[in-house]
Image (cartoon, rainbow, N blue to C red; front, side):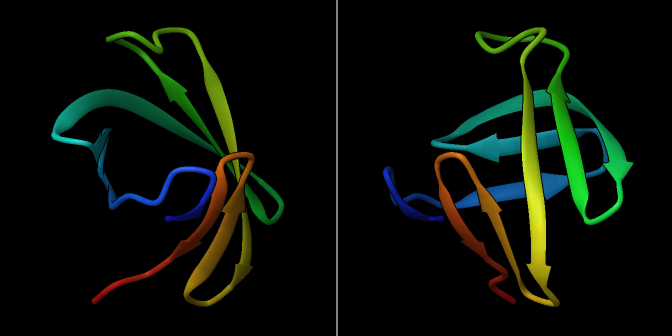
Length: 69
């Protein structure tokens, strides 16, 4: 992720990993957006909107995500 806080974020089935922390999440699709809802940890109950902007890019309120293969 580039932007406010540059870091690596990994999304896997049912979890998100960033800064060495793995959080359990659920994903809900709304058009070109993915709603990521945290089900445990510090962000429990919080939902973040990820807007898909291209085949390898997305935008969140914290910055731009670029797929790294």
